[in-house]
Length: 151
Image 1 (cartoon, rainbow, N blue to C red):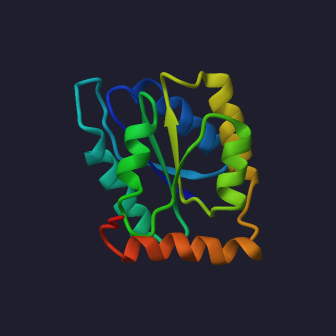
Image 2 (image 1 turned 45 degrees about the horizontal axis):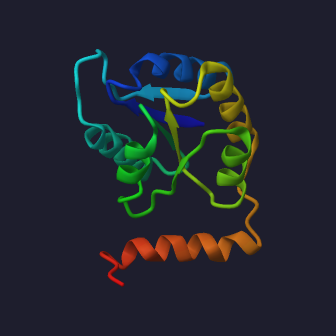
């Protein structure tokens, strides 16, 4: 499996750890930066990762910032991306099994290395169940095709 990984300056310390964990599990990981702790804007790296995931069918993305919130918000602006901010094993497992998430978002300032390792193991073991969840995922995807939603 191929993963594209990106972070901002608040997620760079854990990025190498996450990359190594996925590689230890037999995955190819393409690091899209940044490569220093200089201040950067997370939407720029969300865009880089999401574009690659959308171009490379069957691949996944990993986005890391301080809380994971900014990355997940930015990533979910891309039609075809289902980014899940996961703070525990259960949310990671369900994101894959029920929501067919293709981008995992993590918060360096929220989750320590031990929890992140557990999240990655749960994410990696889980597969989309399909069935009753397929229609829901199709509805999520259709929302992206609607453009701006106003209530």
